Length: 114
Image (tube, rainbow, N blue to C red; front, top):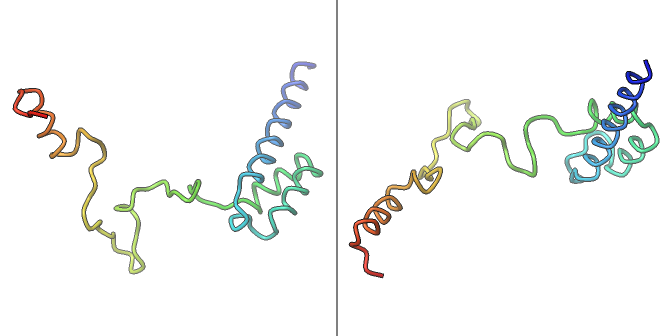
C-alpha cells in the first residue's frame, strides 16, 4: 500500500512539474483564456488542480510545437479545402536529392577533379 501511495505521489509531482515547465516554455500568445503569468500562478499554487486546469483550459491545442506544424506543408489544407501543392518540392534528405547523387557518383568514379 505504501508503494502505491508513493507511486501516486510521484506521478502527481511529475505532472505538476511538467505543467509548470510547459507554462514557462509557452509563448505569451499561446496561452489561452488568461495571461501566461496567471497560468503560472494557478499551476504553482493549485498544484495538481492547477495542472489539470492548464491542460484542459490553458495550453494551446493541436500538434504545434515551437511554431512548427506536425505535418509537412504539402499535407496542409488551403482555405477552400483542397490540398496545396508546394511550388518546388524540396528533397527530404541528401540521398533524395538527384544533384547530390550525381555529384557523389562522380566523386566515387574519380571524375570530379576538385
